[in-house]
Amino acid sequence: MPFPHLKERLRKDGWLYLALAGCILLCLILGMTEGTSTQTAEEARLARVLSAMAGAGDVEVAVFYQEEDALPCGAVVVAQGADDVAVRLQLTRAVCTLLGLEASQVDVFKLGGGSP
Image (cartoon, rainbow, N blue to C red; front, top):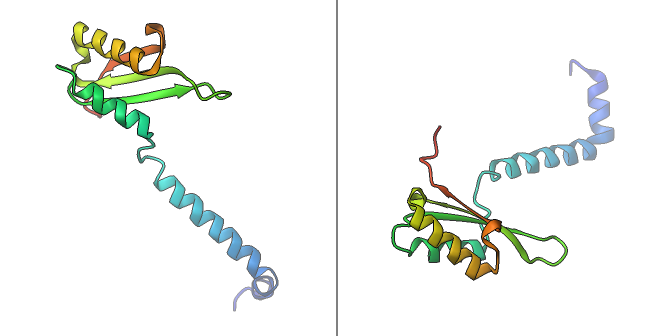
């Protein structure tokens, strides 16, 4: 072995290197899944309801909660039909009704194609 100290070190601290390699592997795996959807069941249900509205098209929803009591404190809706003012107002009203929010706590945006 070209590095005699390395062989001794591996024998002595092998478990440490194994644990370090495991941590690195775990971080890599978690990093690869970071881009996957973390949509909650409630957000998925809201998106289904809202997308059934006339003119809404595809819809995605993100709901924000107060940390201390888990009550909704805001929502963002992204919908294909959001460029139509009437659709945007209907989506806002529906989210307000379903989550008990004020209109000022809901933002609705046009769903883009995904690339700039």
